[in-house]
Image 1 (tube, rainbow, N blue to C red):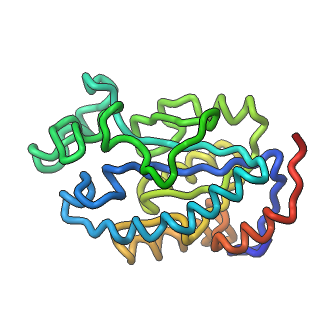
Image 2: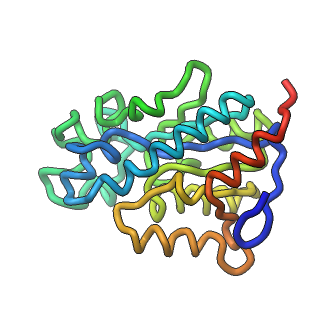
Length: 223
């Protein structure tokens, strides 16, 4: 399929759609992200195209994986270097508008209704920015025989970038869908995408979801 910096080849049978951290705390008005002064409309713009990608992936039988950033209630998996940053009243574990901030099991920690995982879809709870750190994702992908990742979600320059870099070091081929990832900062979005495909695809490929959907709907995934 067409992509930047050159065409991306994938076998749907060994490819997974990864949806990173589309959580209420980050995406919705009144969530943690907005309380930090961010304009969540930049992230909400990702939802409609991502809904189409998710529905199509499910229709053709592509492996779907969701991630959520957050911590166990006693915060024992949150290192001080992460816990002690920011306004003391808005730190991880503090009461927020949608429950304790980035704590597993809280309303704000969960995935938005528009992208709710279906039964059987893998949900990875991660304590860090990257989806491989401190999780079972690597083992899960190996068991499924996955070699390529279609990466979506938020935010482009933080959790998406970290995951793509981790995946690249582990030998996965990554395609980032440019309209299905988002940042609170337009400049970070632009530069983050350029960094992925720079220097001949140093971390992976970038393409709009329309190109991926056109390629995907021509495939037949063996059961």
